[in-house]
Length: 326
Image (cartoon, rainbow, N blue to C red; front, side, top):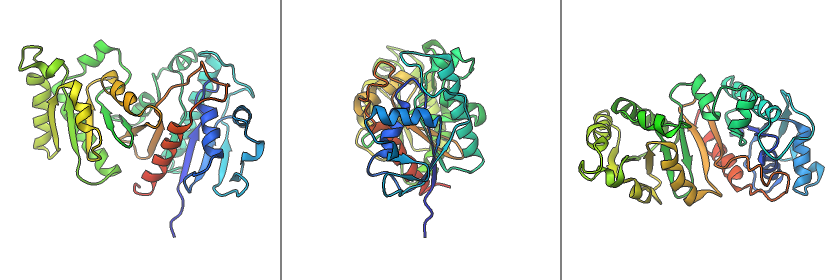
């Protein structure tokens, strides 16, 4: 008999839509068979239920919905008030969202949960709270060097060489050594998550992938040699391909991953394709971590109109990978 996995869910920034989409998913139909631990304020969660027009007993400690099918436990390591301040980044909200995430990560590292689904946070709120990390992935990378930011949907998978860096810093990080190492780590992480054949389609940096050196030398001098080095270690990588076509090449291919060289190169394409149902997944960890691919959406928080589909997809992917990993 298969034991359902334990999945942690953080509420994200209390002033954003994280609590609302988490409440909608946990109270909705089609929840994966698992037991759940919600890291965050129960008072804020109940407020989110009311925002969605859901009855208070839609999600209760010890069960979900009237049938009480999966188990739900609430952990509030604090600090947070019972009602969040909305409208923009706030230091108290940033502090609460970081503490909830940090405690959930520690629970995953102790083996208490097999997967972690994290609600969206505000990087500015973390800064206001004195948190030195730029986001979830950077915090995870401080604990597990080499963590990889990737994005998954039914039609497109994208992995990013660098995360939240200013563009000048991101371009400086495109070196042969960095990229060759990244491709090897990405291939190993994917083999663990989704065994089977895969091809890494590496984007170029310049228009037309440099046009044979006419529009830039990085493809010939840096990116191409890094791809060849990874191939010598058995990685099925190819490229560099023109950045304006590589995502189209990967689209609709379950065995293909488009490798973007910096954040927006990959995310513009991915969010055009799969914004409503895409999932952010951190690779290279000893546990599974997913999140919705959207942000805090302060402008619509508390209005009951946030779309929960990306959060639902993040929970489903976490549950799916939990059945095949660890």
